[in-house]
Image (cartoon, rainbow over all chains, first blue to last red; front, side, top):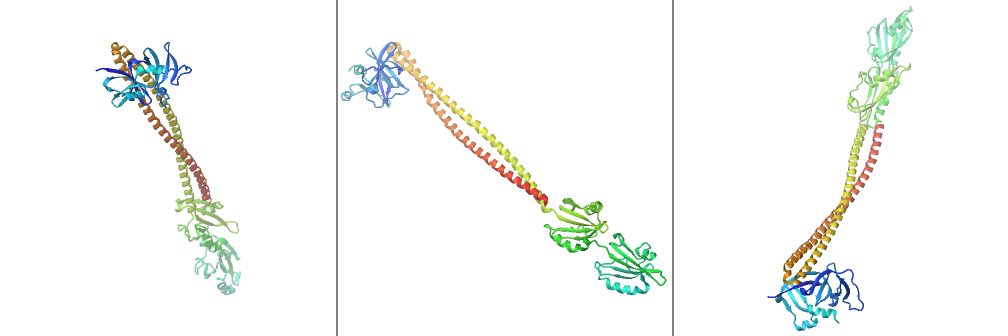
Length: 145
Length: 381
């Protein structure tokens, strides 16, 4: 029986998960974020992470949330998407969990198509539903027009 | 002098006059040295003037017979029991020998004594608590006049003056005396005024005394005294009350500042718990990063992953204490603010108490001064 490990974080009230292989690290939201001109509104800017310049993406703006304010628990989750580093702003990274493959419900093609294949499935843990982000799709969606 | 033949005419005249002379009179006819005829008025008599009584040589009558001239003498009370004037007129026979005398005795009465029965009953009733009037001669009580409200049965007519009696002292000092005496002597407090009375020759012959009870005045004075001392007691108690109100006031102030300090301390506890939360957040992040790192390391990172999991659990535990601490400090704050409110209320109450006791003190002072006035009035009664 195969299992996968997920980094679980919150966007608003909802819990999202991404395979741990796409995660590099979690840091506090940097004080200095350099704005860049002519960028989509969800690109917050860029910051320096130990000598590498990485873009910062406000995922809630990208996903069309109405409430996008941050709290003391907001964090920057650094993702490593096929050697491209980028940071996404999330409302609290809650845990790293290991779940069985069969606990993940794959979405039907129609539903998946409606949200541009961003969510590859839903993990059910007890009463919790965790939306599973498609890491492979993320890079093209976030960094390419 | 009277001729022997005129004697019968004199007797007739005397019989007729006896009851016409104000104050009364006693006529006596002496033959040689013996009363042979006596005529006394209804209101005045002398026991010695009795037919058959013999006179000694030192009497006015015998002196008049021996000296063959009319003699007038004042006889003190000690001789006949009352002051009298004696007039003796010798009776002469044909040979110009004095064979007897006609003796007239007139009561010698001070005008005040004579009027006593007229003015005393009226005067006695004029006093609020009644009065007892009396007159004494030089040795004993001669007249008494009680009032309806007040009498002194222990001082009857004939009472022998004692040297402690005021009348006795007036007679010997020749000065009027006005004195208050307490209840120890006559059973109630009295005011006694006594005045000497003089005869025409400026000799003291009697005293006039007036006794008024002082019961009301003394009772009033005692009551005002009691009132004053109770008021002093009350004033002292109020003073104590005011003092304790001040103590309560300062205690409440201390309590208030203690309460503020407790509020500060719970604020500090909250700051510390915020710091704990921060550390827990940081630890959680470290744990998550460690877990990510372990996963990226694959099998080699498995042991590290376990440690990372433990770290995350610890951070979750320490973080969970934060809301508990917050809850506790919130309860502390709430309780403390309740206590503060109560203390403020009792502070207000104690201020009210202090104000009230000041008011009472002012009233008491007023009453005290009134009772002082009352006492002064009582003293003058």
